[in-house]
Each structure stands twice: as C-alpha cells, then as structure tokens.
Length: 253
Image 1: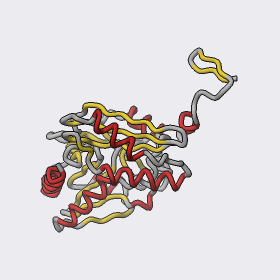
Image 2: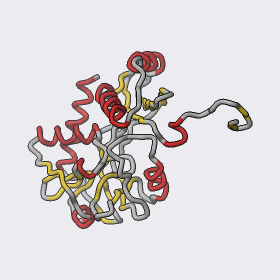
Image 3: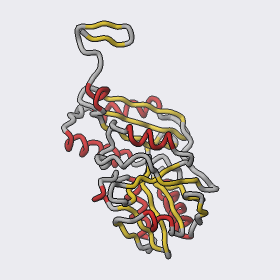
C-alpha cells in the first residue's frame, strides 16, 4: 500500500525521479516568444539522457514547440523542461534576464563540495541548493577535495589576469555550460586568450576580474564587484564580451 498527502493507493503514486533525482532539466531564457539556444539545450539533455539511461519520448520536440507557441508570447520569460523515464515537465514564467550594472558579490563555498556528477544537469541538485541557501553573497565558488576551484552553484566561473581569461576545465566534472561555451568562442573571436585548467583559490583571489555565466543572464554573464569582500574590476575584456554577446542575441531575434 502507498500513502501520499492523505491518499491511500495500491499503486505507486510517485515516480523514480521524485525519489532519487533521476531526471534531467534545462532552464532557458526567452525573448519576444523565442527561446534562445533551444536546440543546443535539447541536444545537451538528449545526450545526457543517453548517458544515464533515461528514455525521452520521441514527441518531446513537438510538445515543447506547442507549449512555447501557446504560452511563450512574452517580452521576456524563463522556460524550463525536466524529463525522466515517466514524465515530461515544462513551465514558462515571465522573467527578467539576470543583470547587474553594479556587479554582484561572490565568495567561496566552505561547507559543501562540488557535486561530482556535476557534468550532468540532473534533478540531484541538493548540494547546490543548500550551498546557495547558505551564501551571504549572490553566488559562490565550489572547491573540490583537491583544493581546486570548480564552478558556481548555478553558473560557470571565469577570472581574468593580465588580460587572459581563465576558467576551470571540463575534466573537473563541471557542467559544460552552453553560455560558457559561447563566451569562450566569443573571447577567441575577439582575440582574447582563454586558458582552461585547474586553478587555486589564491589564483582566483588575486585576479583582476571575475565573472559567472548562465543561460538566464541577460548579457551572458554577471561580473563580480566584490569577491570575499575584495573589490574587483569590470575589466575591458568583460565590457567587450557583454557587447558581443548582446549583439549575438539581437542577431538571433
């Protein structure tokens, strides 16, 4: 027998994605009825599903297109999908893309380690949620057990030193963020050198500038004005990346 909120049943009332976080999700930003980089997000969730054995229904693309056509006629919005073997969940909410002209505050995360399955955007997100909840700053940076910086609670992290952009490499099991990928491509297009690798807390602290990337960030990134209460600069590289990312978005609409 099974019980759920006062309902008693002989059949299971909830699915495995509820019990074990065995699901995948993507969160996207939409403008004027169009979801940005939708195909890239669907490609990532499809590849992740194959990797962990989730059988996505064949009609998911049609269901998504129909849902967006019916409810996505908004100036700005957030679109989320979550899939498991048993469910396809979607939501659209009016949402202003994240931006911060004056920069954000950020700090190291000391109580929790990075999710070692972080390269998959799964429903098993408890560590990130708890870390985010404990922060007094807007965003935090995880450190792995080897003392290497990895990623943020909801974002990928970049830092700048002597006009070179540095970011943790994917072999640290971080999420291969789509905006991360786009920012790296834009940087190289602009002639800005990018180095992916393993970096320490000290290197991040001594950087000239820091920024985070996430699909819901209006300019592709949020720059950091204070990290661990140390003032950081909005460097010329960050200005250039914002401008070029915005141009890319405008060309898509």
